[in-house]
Image (cartoon, rainbow over all chains, first blue to last red; front, side, top):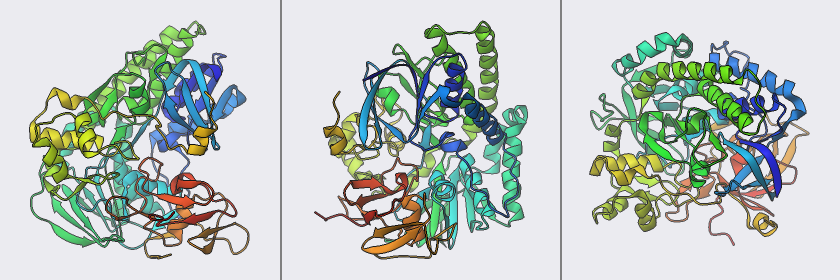
Length: 463
Length: 102
């Protein structure tokens, strides 16, 4: 076991914010991330395409400036790429897998900045090869080096919808159709906040301009209800929806070779929740979110949380939260600078303003249960264990109400993704049938390993 | 190896010589050094990468970022790996649609 002072898990904007504050105060900081580089899921380098027009993204501009600061920090930052946290115990011992072997760390201060993953409401056939999450399609283009061929349909809600469409335009492969679940009227409540933070508005308008210039068909207030194709996707069924996302009709079949769909992002809470950090349900912020105080402390001693895991707000908010966590960790480790209290106060003001400007947009884009009307009895709700809605209903008919009991009976959420893709959906499905009640506030429990680990790695590990 | 070349194509064309050779379902494939295994498989027309245990349904990549586990393939000498989380290395031997194998 390696005793360390500060450990940060996640090299996205929140983790980098904390790590930079720590090393700039002379504290050693170990930064763990699964990816080979810095930036997390949102700021990893974008591929350059010859015909792409420059995009106006304040968030990516911030990312570039921060990566310069990271380079300046040099070797003071103990960056460990390609490392997965396999387990985190309540005494904050971390088990980390890297290059086929396991090691463990016991930090004096630990920040979990684990970000978020795609949130996708279930629909019939969403497990068909050729159906991806929006983040998945972006990842194929940026990191896996492939572009979709044939008719591509993008659907859902949230910033990734327009971004994925614009990146396909950049690559010279514009999508055949974009279906935005949120209608124009649904976006109106977001306007006052957007006017206070015009960078968000500018970015959205810029992305829309890119789609318009490429002649991409964008239908607002539409949703995909079904995908069909067996071995590979052949077509999707789509319909207009009302403001509660209820389908207005059975819908039309549209030819599609690739469908990318997403409804925002879900916080990655498994490690922190497993270590005893409190969580609460907050649908517009992505589902279950990690709770924290104004210094980003999570509750258990020596544990901090920051970034999208605390509610999905995007990179600029994550950066501020990460810096606040870093300052608080530095103070706890006895390495504050004289001006740190004033700096914390300024960052908290910036954070409050950014959160308040985003609130209307987050509510406007939040998944609505009306779309679940399209979930048929034979729709697979839990992708890993292939549990259908009717299997869940068999169980709820018996009067059981908590997600953990549901997991024990039906295996829902017990599979390889550990409920990351079905947890929030299950909560919405049960709430729709049973009404909101306290037993639904508890997320699906998770157990180590948080990431896949081979028996060989386990066999070679000595605690 | 059943391929469906109409769904994805490589952004950077596979190198004529050089690059990395990997064997997928018994066939040698050439790929740019450093590309992910998922990128190579999709770029060669492999969309369905495994079949599910309970219902035997085909699955392909879904999240592309290591979370969903739908792109699991059999890597010789290692076992099941996420194709999206592995970079191709010379001599890799990979099987897709591995269910029912010893």
